[in-house]
Amino acid sequence: MTLDRVASLLASIPLFSSLDLAKIKLLVLASDRVQFDSGQILCKQGDYGDAAFVILDGDVRVFVSHDASSMEVARLKSGSIVGEFSLLYGGERLATVEAASDVVDTLKISKDDFLTMMRDFPEMTVVVLEHMARSLSEAQEALASTRQELDDLKVKAGHG
Image (tube, rainbow, N blue to C red; front, side, top):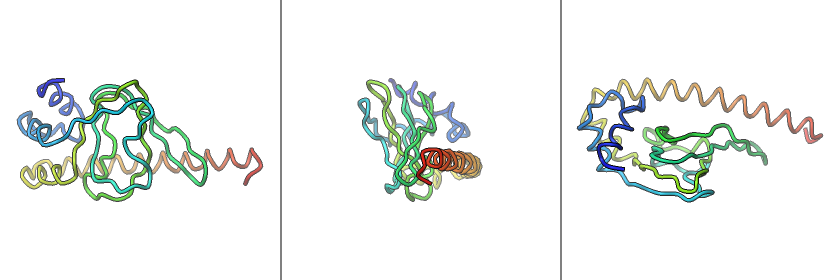
């Protein structure tokens, strides 16, 4: 995928949509292209997060674990971003993300490169914070729902 196509794909993602194409291209050039084979883990729940992945081509599955159970909570495709919370705070990953296609092509954006962009282009900070707040709210709702489903399954199985 060419620089122009990758930049256009990023421009369609709400997190980056406030940036002009030249700034997005700078971010693309500073980031790494990483490919994953089917079944490979992009990031694991609980691990320290220092980067986000933009899915350029292929599909990934998102799993959330609770106690000894794991549940698929999403399937994402090209144009999606995973691990974006790591770009701001670098805490523990909230989910495990696994390559679902034969090959998944990603753009790995490091926390350091992203923070440099925010420092150099402060106009993107408000949009990023709004996006992160919205995403955090959605993630918390999905996590609570998933935990409830897992607990319900345990009760039905006689383990709770």
